[in-house]
Structure formats: structure tokens, C-alpha cells
Length: 168
Image 1 (spheres, rainbow, N blue to C red):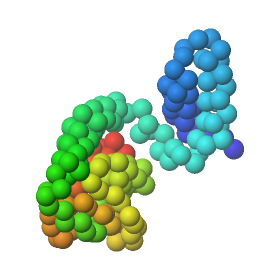
Image 2 (tube, rainbow, N blue to C red):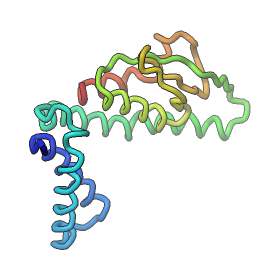
Image 3 (cartoon, one colour):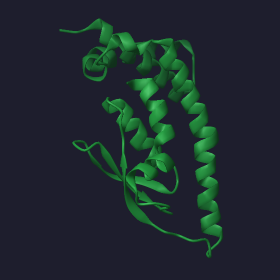
Image 4 (cartoon, helix red, strand yellow):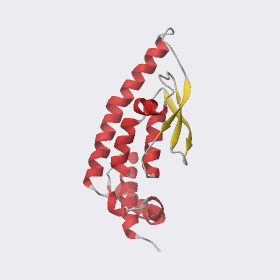
């Protein structure tokens, strides 16, 4: 049986993604996007939306917007500048290592957001996740510590704080 409370958020998200990727708001695209969104929402809503009541909470939307702006304008820029300096300066020290980085969020969406944010930030890549111990294994281009708590502060704490407010 279809749960419309779960299907509607999936429909809205699918429609937004469709319109953004087509880059058009013509009648054909709006109609096609609506049809596609309804089909996707009905097929996947119960799978991807566990708590429909959280979906349209304005506080979560605020944190999502704040996180997106911070991530793309601050975190990504700082990381890219660091990697560019390393590429252009052969004497810049490298200290690559795989470090354990614990996480304390509860939902899979929050955990995935953190892992993706770490991986998409130049200089760090999540190479494995231990779900039982709640630990990421992160390859760090310039490991400044091997202490998991300190590594968390340096690599993922800000990502985790935002992801927790959005998804937990």
C-alpha cells in the first residue's frame, strides 16, 4: 500500500531535481516533471522517507541552506586552495595516512552526508565505514594527528554538526 505522507516529499524532491537538471520551466517540462515526480514518489516514498513529519520542518530547511552555502563557499574553497598549494609547491610537506574518524549521528542520511562531504573535500577520502563502531576510515593527504577525537575535530566535526541538525 502506498503511503502518501511519505510519497509527497519524494515527489517534491524529484520534481525539483527534474526542473533543475532540465533547466527549463516550460509547460512541457513542468508536465513531464510532474508525471515523473508522481511515479518516482509513489514507487520510492516509503523507502526513502522514514519520518514524513520531519521532511518539511522549516528549521531543517534553514540548516540545509546554511550548510550548503557554508560547504560550497568556505569548506570547499579552503580545501581546494590547500590542494592547489600542495600541487604547485613540491616542497610542501605531505603526510598521508588513513585515520579513524568517529561519528555520532543517528540516521543513515546524516552519516552519508558526512561521508560524502569528507570525500568531496579535496585532501580527504572516506575509504571505509565501520557501521558497528560508528567510525569512518579516512585517507588524509596531510594527517596532522592519528588520534580519532582530534581527527574528528579537524576533518568532520562541522559536517557532522550540520548533518545532525538536518537529518537527525
